[in-house]
Length: 588
Image 1 (cartoon, helix red, strand yellow):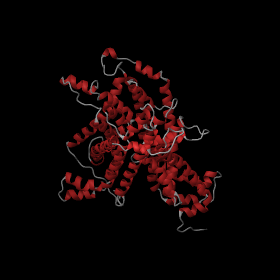
Image 2 (cartoon, rainbow, N blue to C red):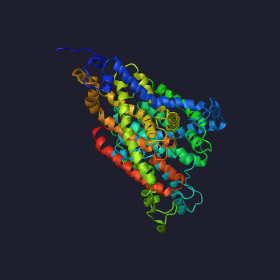
Image 3 (tube, helix red, strand yellow):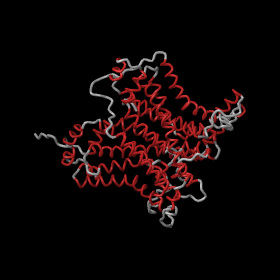
Image 4 (cartoon, one colour):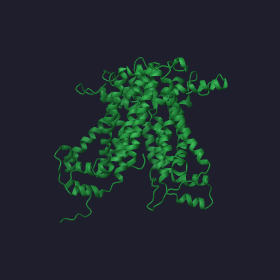
């Protein structure tokens, strides 16, 4: 009998027998040459999804003509973005992102504390309600708030005038405040999801010691709880700020009508709203924003270097719940109010608008079902439904499969080149959807004739996989870190191949994380508009693109119908996630 002592996983994988017969199995379970082949294949896939569009973005910024046309190389694109107007656009972008991040973080911390650390009634239900806005496509709530906060015929302002007789509107969604408010609706639940489990898992012994020493609840919260949460808060702030830089829907719907421009809408307008699309300007601006995003990510890494996110120690504990007394009904009401203004109010507007003949004329003689008939008879709508479902199912599955393999190599092996693979997979994190869309626009247009991707639904699929890969890698990396290497080593010692070990051991144990990542990726594809609006063509429209086209043509009533149908789809998938997935894991 042979006894193995202190052998690394790489030693075992180099010498374990290969049971699978295909090339992919040999690539990851055999000797150095097959492994090298497998690594090269993975690098080629990631390179096509990240490096290739990035390099074409650089190419387009230096080329004077649109993709596929003869031209010359120059720096005119970069000269054209170095203007006072663009400095104002950059200031708008950074200022709006900062203005939405600070209040979002404060509210999200308060909501996470209420759900995780207080005796507020129905906390489990409140947690589901608070997170629901994160799963609703932003284009839906943007259109709903466009109908609610319109200064002339918005429902809120019509009710305000009827109650008070005032002539001036109560709210004007087409303003800086409107842009920031709509961004907050998605930033708050995103930050809440990021922090609530950290609050829940925090060891309460230090808080209890503070209280025993005579500190008030506020002092304890400020000097103990928040300091323990500082790494999570810092990371949350940076992530939210970066996402604010990337925003598109809020600025498109509420900023442009008010003359407020940000970088993403300027890129969109330079391609879609000019008599002659200025691709060189768009790609130059996209490359510049890439540089800004890179600096922000570097700043995030520098701030978090050396910080520990461990709030659970080896000593057992049960997180304490603060008794609020009568104030628990105040915190309960605050959570319900957040749900009301972020979900019920915009969804109610969509329902209201779908049953009346004209938006803004809400009388009994205007009730109709014609908008439902028009939508159901619209072939473009059904084609968009098929495209969205296909892209969601295929895209989420392919993205999570790719993310699982990348995370495995990064976390579970010591193979040379794993840092390169991990870096390539994370590269889209620094590329807003609009920027990646411009890069793929050039990349697909410059492919050889026998590779017809440009203008097809596959162009959207590849863009979605690229955008979703960082999330997939993050989810699977956290899951793999929790699995002991002993299980994998035992499987390989007993003759299992890499594929058998991956499927029967790692996938079997990590499937809940895979399922959660799949749901998040699917919702991300449903929500994506910025890349879709640049890459779609006739026949490859998604629901988000169809909604935008209907809104631009003034069909707000049909938008309401499709919005309600999409909301039903969101609720259905959210229910499936809660019913069949969340029952097997602790929290989303």
